[in-house]
Length: 262
Image (tube, rainbow, N blue to C red; front, side):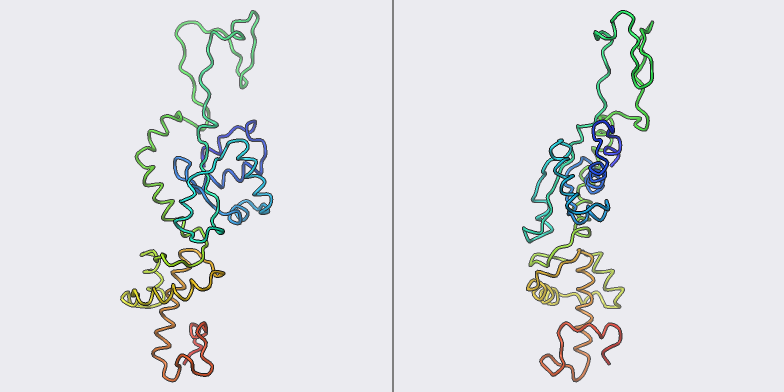
């Protein structure tokens, strides 16, 4: 995100497009790759309409601030093709510090030269060349920053993959597996033993929801639904007189959660 914040206003004057780019950078890995928040998510983050967000994304692509990335990354988490957002890569090479100006430039050697550059008058210096001053709020060069981040890029990428499921809402699919920590937390909150999560229970849960593609949720949300499913099945098994197919039986009834079942 720091890269997007340092883009000169003259290079990206559209404030709304800059806001969208900042949000994209917030979801990107350390090297700017693999950002794929949905248009709806960008709309919520920026406060812009979805139509405006799409227009600003087109503007950023035309200006080469972003390019299409590896679309397979979104496919890892979202099984339905028509629900996958576009994966973008940020063009971090844009906006880098320009190379120091040559002292032998024609303007510099012109007679009576009195150029102003960022508020500093340029004049011929005597003695050894002075070291170039780093720009404000950016005390290291792009190359130095990339060197410092080289050892953690792989870890950052993995964090993107691990967290993407929590950010993206998707319909249930056959290959889905609950995240270990998320489902363990939900089981503990529901007061369920860890051994209540079996392959048979997961298969039944997935089979029920795969048939309902209109239902979408985040990875954490699906873990909550799974814990609720397990608790409901245990309560129904323990309750005498409530059997599948009996009058009044509702497979989706969750009123028991609030004490509706006795």
